[in-house]
Length: 387
Ligand code: FAD
Ligand code: NA
Image 1 (tube, rainbow, N blue to C red):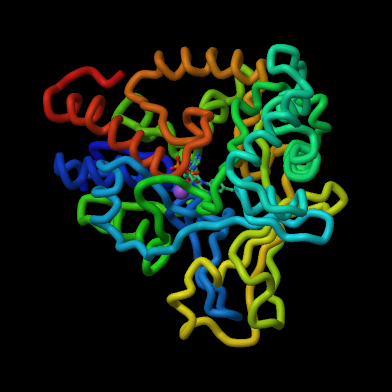
Image 2: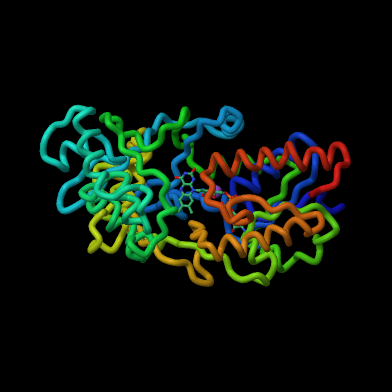
């Protein structure tokens, strides 16, 4: 058999969107290489046999978008439930509804406020530090929302997320800290939101289900690179520093340790996500997956539930890279890799690892659709150079 027309490294949303478009629209033969034992990248999920509950194996994934193109594209492969994401936060023995809103303000300050009264209260607390005087994340946060809300809802959580005291973090990590002066507590404010009716893996599998797409699992690109490099166009969605053998240094990432357990109760916490804002609680969040799919109650086994404690830390070699840290040094290193990537013949870099950028699913899909329209289609359909 003849070789592929295109090699895609990585079967996450970015790689599968590219593969699907090139196979369906251009009739190309696409070979997808994936080093894990499953396709789907970090959105992969599986049903936990002990509870019948779908577990997102690389952290909770909630789909949301306001991008019409992305929404109509994803609906070819899956229907969505009407799940609306809400997050609660524990602090000093109380549970609050997040993001910070009028309900939280009333509960936290122990009295009712009109929207106007709440605005005035927070503005006066925020006036303690002027925005032009801030030198670190703590001061920036206080200048935005005042000290009481900062100390309860930002300080401990941020310190745990970054393993760093917020007075030692750069002020530019946050540009805004939204406070809603209404009782609205939907976590996202996008036009569309929901979870795939029959799960992420079914959705991702349907994207790859095309006679011209072959997904080769447990295959590391670097073990077979010589077969393809310079011979066939490649879309690479792995870590950009790894592609170049870390020649310019390592880009830094945070990872999350996910400790999964089955609890012998029907309902552990009454909702999908609870943040733990107290600094002395070592985990940042607990996820209880059954609450993402209340419509599946009949397939969930009674008397048991699967939960995950999340612990955030700096990624070391061999850890899953989850969130780019993006220090000033990372930004300088990334520029050098971008130059190398630009010069690499017949290879396009994409996705969250290939661009060292946190991308939500809809952003990864949108960015892959753009790569298809702006680079891959012109190359394969019109003979434009691949750069
Ligand atoms: P990935 O999904 O990471 O896929 C890259 C693939 O490439 C992986 O399967 C990897 O194994 C493979 N690969 C890498 N190197 C090689 C190699 N050398 N050879 C072969 N294969 C290779 N988005 C949302 O919209 N909502 C959420 O709630 C949400 N929650 C998230 C929570 C966490 C903890 C994380 C980390 C991300 C979350 N995301 C969420 C983002 C979502 O996971 C990404 O948008 C999506 O993963 C991006 O897809 P991708 O294809 O770029 O990368
Ligand atoms: Na993914």
